[in-house]
Image 1 (cartoon, helix red, strand yellow):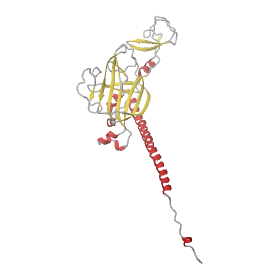
Image 2 (cartoon, one colour):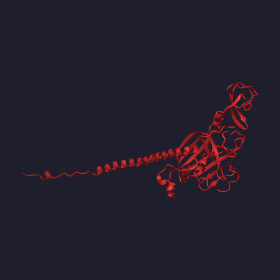
Image 3 (tube, rainbow, N blue to C red):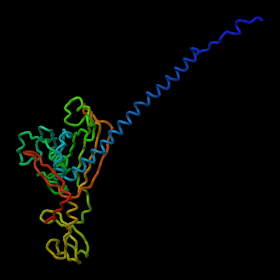
Image 4 (cartoon, rainbow, N blue to C red):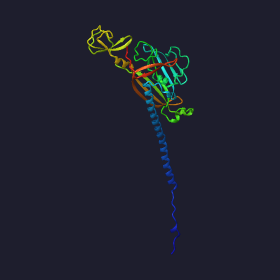
Length: 320
């Protein structure tokens, strides 16, 4: 019996060049898609990390400012520059002069015509940010102060006043441990997540009773009355005659709590702008935190320099 040699020939099969080319094309398209999505995922992770740091730092700074904290020495490692862009206004609301103050760890610069205490004595650079007390005192600067640096809530006082705009430059307090002190590597310090902080300590607008005039009032009516150059609130105990003046007639009772609340209630706003780039530019991150703070604002003095301010939320003084 004869067999054909082709009957036992083993058949060899493999991918053709066309099939290999199609596979490479599919893999290439997939890699392009993956590479395109990868930066987006990394950006989302970075944004989430930065937002988390901002929320944690905001809690620390908000509590420190509204509690008038004076022992946070660690802040000197993070707050490295504070500015105050101020304007001095005439009683009619026109700008008399303006300028900017700058504070660093080793020095401070105060522009001409800004109030310092004692007046005119700011001649030697002071170590403004060398301790946490000074930092909190500068961050708590009220939005409006009178010509002597005292906080004011009423701009229609017939006197000159200052408008203060505080901006702080801060390295993240809640960042990675590798960025924490005593890290002195300049490259790592410049690479630390940094943000700009706008601090606004503004008086809260309230409902002021109408100013007293010589006319009859019914029992329970409330009026405001200028006593010793200060606006005071009064309530009628009974029906009054036109000659019964608040402060000198028993028909009127002074409403001390409303006065104190109007004078001591402030809105504290902290606006975070991030990231702060080494070239001075800012990123797109922005978030504002608000808190109402009721209490007096105590003052202290940076040696031969501007005044420092501290909330005292536990203190309400009876106005005399």
